Structure formats: C-alpha cells, structure tokens
Length: 183
Image 1 (spheres, rainbow, N blue to C red):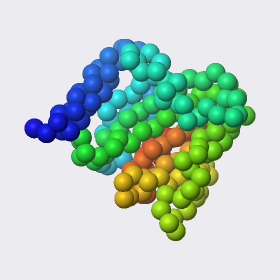
Image 2 (cartoon, rainbow, N blue to C red):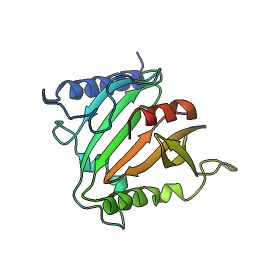
Image 3 (cartoon, helix red, strand yellow):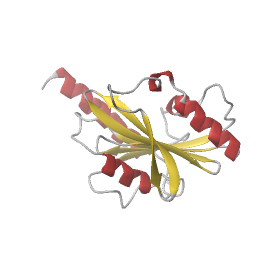
Image 4 (cartoon, rainbow, N blue to C red):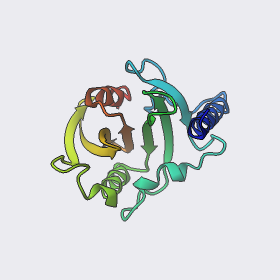
C-alpha cells in the first residue's frame, strides 16, 4: 500500500468518524439547505458539520466569506459529498450560512467573489464567472481550476442565507447538486 493511499484512507476514516460524532439532535442539515437524502445520482453524503462538531472550527470553513465587508455573526452548516473515486477525487461541498440580515448575506457573497485567486481566469480563454439559474434564483457560477480540469461552483444568497455549492467537473451534475438545496 502506498503512503499516499494510506494517508487518503486516514483522512476518509477521520471524516467518517467526525460524521459519527454528530449529536442525536443533528445539525438540522436538511432544514438548513444541506441535503442529506434524495441526492442527485452519483453523489453520496459523507458528513454534515456545524459548530457542534468536535474538531471542526467553522470559522476556518467560512474564512473565504470574511473580507472587507462586515458579515456579522453567522451560523454555518457544511455538507460534504463524495462523487468520484474515494481517495482520488476531491469532495463536493455545500455550505449554508445564516446571516443577521440580507445585507450581511450580500456582503458575504461579495467577499467570497473578491478572493484574489478569482482575479484571473482558470484557463486561457475560459471566463471565471458566469450566471446560472438554481431553483428560480439567478446565481453566480464560478469556474475553478482543479488540476487540468474545471470545477463548477455556485454562490448566491436567499434573503439572509448564503449558499455555496462546490460541485465537480460536470456542470449538469453540479447544477443538480445546487438544486438539491431547495434554496
């Protein structure tokens, strides 16, 4: 067994262990917009984490939403999903952040979009940003580079709630995952 494979297996085992440590009350994942059932074909839930999850600092999970604009106090939930080969492909994620107001949610989206890594296109001739429609909302589509391929990311606010969907390299599948939020 290669060292790389062993490390990946340890990370996966840790993630599964963390998922098993969630309280009986749960995180309210489905209610918070983080789908746990009826996922699009090819996606499976690995874990749902929030402030009550041991060993997870939610401020680290939402650091990209902090920036020049104040977003105030927030509550966040993150769903992690497997879509590819375990230990080889990256995980898809859905982050839902409840803000104090719609203005704070808009500020969080603006901070996310202002990340320095988004200043240049992912590949020559490929636009970084576009728009898409998810559950009747016009959302920002971000094309991110993962190795030699694109990864599709969607971000929007629904009132005082911010939704970030980090999909995979298939636009249609990523949009289906975003639609599964119901937001």
